[in-house]
Amino acid sequence: MLLLPPSDAQADSLSSKALRIAASKRGSPYRYGAQGPDRFDCSGLTFYAFKRAGRKIPRTAQAQYRKTVHKNPSSRVPGDLVFFHRRGVVYHVGIYSGRNMIWHAPRPGRVVRRETIWTNQVWYGHVF
Image (tube, rainbow, N blue to C red; front, side, top):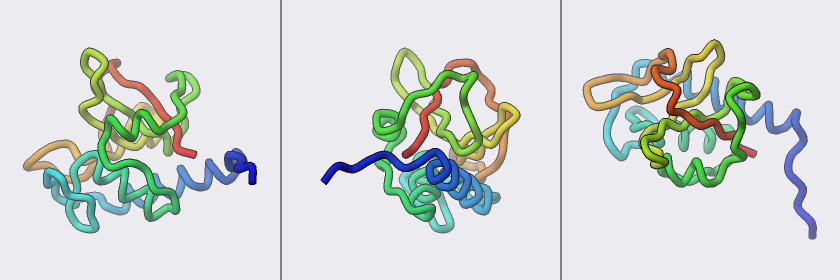
């Protein structure tokens, strides 16, 4: 049986739903290794949001990057994943929310929040 990728409408719906789920976790505390429902690290938040939206993605930021369809910054859309990298190694991930902003779980002592992308050292990926 041949499996075809979902239509653009289905993919957009998935990404939009994941974005809404991530945003609904605003104020949840950061905890290394946590994947919800009340505490998150960066990839735990994206993992949780897409799982709740109906698509299982890998658990770590680097593995999530490998499993997405990579995009140019000019074609990014809300719901795409934003991967922060240094020398080709992904160290952080968030969900693009438009206007150069992401929802993410930043670091210990912080909470899930919407924030401006602070560097140009990012890659974009779309989850299908």
